[in-house]
Structure formats: structure tokens, C-alpha cells
Image (cartoon, rainbow, N blue to C red; front, top):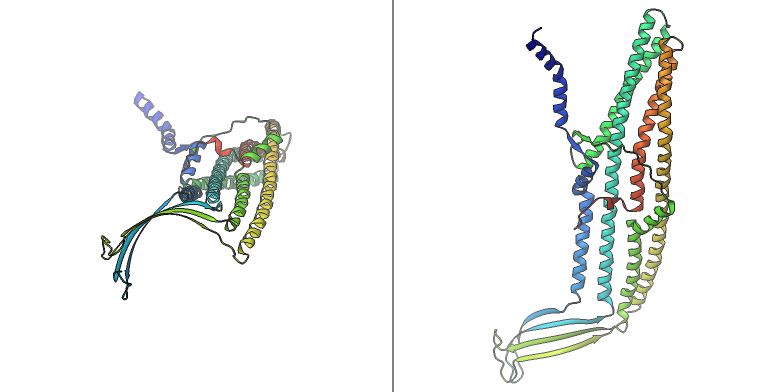
Length: 436
């Protein structure tokens, strides 16, 4: 074989690897941070929460402008068939009025306060949406990585079962094992193929879920940067719970709702108080459309006026409104207590699950080492015909389950850490999110 033939043979052998690398290089690789940024930018729930925030800002600005003076203009035309002496039959007038509210029973300033609380509530809603969205991405991301690792392990398990079946087939051909021993290996091999199909399907479904969050076709191909980096964190329950009390958006919003209910009592009492307005007006009157002249009298009028009005009787309506507002306050406080109880339980569940996941990693690592050694020993003994296929297949099953538990423990712990941060209301703080 000459040099040219050798080079061609080498290229022929390397062609599959080269083409495989080319295909891989064309696949988009995504990190966890990239996925989160994409979802936060495209998720409909985020857009809805941001729209609500913008609306609340506009409502607050609008209520503040109710405290400012207002400017009005008017133009009148009056026809009097039987006018009094000295008055024209046709009268035209126009003028300007400036009105400044002085006191409206605290209604105006309280409305501004209500809108400020509502804006903070909208910010809490947006923060909760960010928290939940990030966790959803985190969960989908970890599920994919875990599913891919388990699929790889199932594929390795199938390779072990295939190798064992070939050994059993060779032993059967020379009469070292009975027929049922070979059949058992064949059945386990068939089951291993089915397990691989199911594992691949679970991986595809996990990838489809993340694609839905990313706003891409369910079959869109991508690769993920692995986050299998175990770092043990010691957590204190009191610290975790206190963090949740201070930062959980639902609790913040519940406290704001209580303050809004208290302000509603002030608003319901405002009809008991007088309203005071200061106004200044200018008017010009004439007997022609431009109101340039008025016979037998002044054609311009200027005045400043301070007006106080007070409703003396509303048939008990104001009293009923106050009673309703007080009952609503009591109900809002009960609702805040209920939300606190629910969040306390949620935080406790996430905390315990994280502690459980942390302990599982230590157990899983020891189990993997033991299962590998157990499989090696049983495989060697089978080669020496000191045990049966049952022993090897049982050892292989233990090894496969130990590896699955290992990956579930590691990725489960990462996800549990994110669950604690989400339950504490601080998961969104790890990512810079611009809000309207």
C-alpha cells in the first residue's frame, strides 16, 4: 500500500468523526443564564406583569394630577325673545376658570396613597412572576441534564447486557450453561432495549418542555452546559424562614393589601367632611359673537371664590360604606394570615427537601462505588462459571439503579437549592432583570 492509499484510508476512517463534529458544532449551546434571559424576555406571563406595572404607574401619575389646579374654558350663547330693559336679545359670553382643590376630606391624598400601594403590589406581582419563571427554567434545565445522564447510563447498561448475552451465548454453544440461563439473558437484553427507548422518550419530552418556555419549536435541537457541580450548603431554618418573611412577594403584597383596606376606611369617611375649593374666573359678555361690547353695563367680570360644601344627609349611605370597609379590612387581615401559613409550609417543604437531597448525595456516591465493585466481581465469577446469569443480571440492575439514583440526587440537590431560594423570594435577585 502506497502513501496515497494510506492517507485515503485514514481519511475514510476519520470521516464519520469529522462529520459528527460538524453536526455538533451546528447545534446551539445554551447555558442556564442564557435560557433564563431568553424566557424572561419572551414569556407571556412576564409581558402581562410588565403591562400591569406600566398601567399602575400611569394610574399613580393620574391621581397625583388631581391635586393640581385645573383650567377650564366656556362659551355661551343666550337668546331672549323678551329681554329686560337695556338688555340685548342675543347674549354671547366666554371665559376662563381656574380651580384649585384645597380639602376633599382626605379623599385626594388617600387616593394617591392607594395608587402608590397598588404600584408596589404590581412590582411584587412582577417579582413573583420572575421568581416562578426562573424556577420553571431551572427545573426544566435540570430535568434535561438528568434525563440525558440517565439515558447515557441506560445505554451503558444495554451495552453491559449485550456483552453478557454474548458471553452466555458462547457458553451455551459449548454446553457450559443451560438453555434457560441463555433465555434469561435474552429477556433482560430485550428489556434493556425497551428501557433505552423509554429513557430517550423522557429526554425528548424534557427538551420539549424547555423549548416551549424558550418559545421555540418543540423539536428544536440544542445542547446545554452541564451544572453537575456539587457544593454542599449548610442552611439554618430560622434564617431561611426570616428571609422568606422579608422578601416573599406574596407576603409583601398581602401587607400592602392590608394598608389599602385601612385607606379604604379613610375614603369611606370622606363624605362626612366638607370639601373646599378655591377658584378664579374671568368672563367677557357682549351682544355679538366676539363679545366685544355690552350695552348699558360692564362687559368683563373677574372674581375669586372660596367654596365649601358639606353633605348633611345621605340616608346612612356613608355609615354603611364605613361598616363595609371595616369588614373588608378584617377579611384582608385574615387572608394575610392564611398566605403566611401557606408560605411557611412551602418554605419548610423546600428546606426539608434540600436537606434530604444533600444527604442522598453521600449515600448515592457510596452506593455507586459498591455497585460497580459488586458487578465486577459477579462478572468475573460468571466468566469462571462460579455463579449464574441471575447473579450478573442482578448486579447489573443494582449498578444501573445506583447510577440513576446518583444523578437524581445531584441534579435534585441543585434543583432543591433553587426551590429554597424561590420559596424565600430571592431567586430573582441572582439575575439582573430590567423592569418598566
